[in-house]
Length: 443
Image 1 (cartoon, helix red, strand yellow):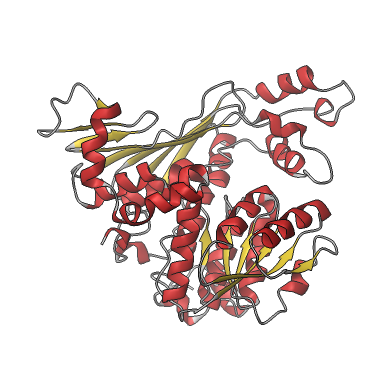
Image 2 (cartoon, one colour; image 1 turned 30 degrees about the vertical axis):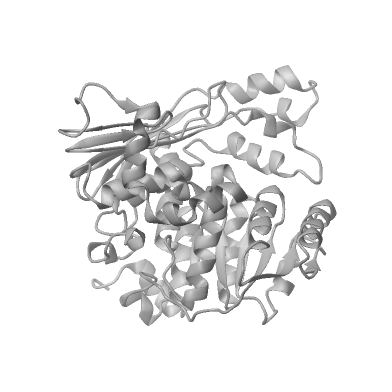
């Protein structure tokens, strides 16, 4: 019992700990190339319909089936398919569990999961157990047990499990990734990411066809942590090679008072409205989480969906030779920019983007911007992932990324509950981070 953890012992007895867990696991996972990627959806609301719209434009992708209990969501998705001249997908709308009947089909390769946060992991495990790849909306999981369930199932089934962290495919984020891989910023020391996005208006979406306003707001009632960390954190993790030469080791988190949602409810809704019946709003309006990595780097991740504050993802990466900061974009590089006391920014950055734009953006950026989705990042993410499946290549994000980036939610809750004491990260790679090379998309 000293050679494996008690948890792994229990998994082995349950038949869930396969030989893959002691080998390469899901690192660099490559699966047989698919001439046509036959896709299906669990949940086809607004976010998923964006992915559907991109899929319908791609060569080598076919939409086979849709599962969603909401008639209006299904109707809107079918209209997109009709407008694109695509065959009508089969519909599974007989309640929230009807997706399981869809998973019995043998003509599906890939399933998109775009449902309530708390359902992501369970449904994604069902997808992989049915022999299909899964793409999950963010965050991939809300508990550590769910993170481990994704990892264990992906390793056991040999199926791709990718979290759809679209911000990794923004032009600026790809530019930064290229700077880091080429060593332009020197040895990396520190990163900052955020999701600052005033979304109190979602509290008004409480109809049967807009359930997100209910389930998402309920997280603010029940939890207190960094509940949506991956948009800011994902790119920083890729710059630093997290799970690929380094890993998150521990974190500490603090939160402000929980005021904004309560005040908004009193201002916008009648006294008997569900949000004015909440006894206590638990989630602090702004959360700041600090992470230390195994190689000694530091990361700050902030999250605020409540305050009257302009949108921001920070996207700052600092090295021994220079720093890039986002929102607005700015850059300083020792001995290359005029001095280290003033940013190069605005129009003056154009030559730097010309020189260091990521090869993927150079090839696909114009098409991505034309097809849209947060400036083109959404289209580029879907295009790239489908390309990898069609060519039998490893995806840019794997199940270890999905688990590590999402785990910040649960771990920050634990830290706050312990007066901001540090909390250790699980090593979801089981030590493989030490020998896994950095993301190779640059070459």
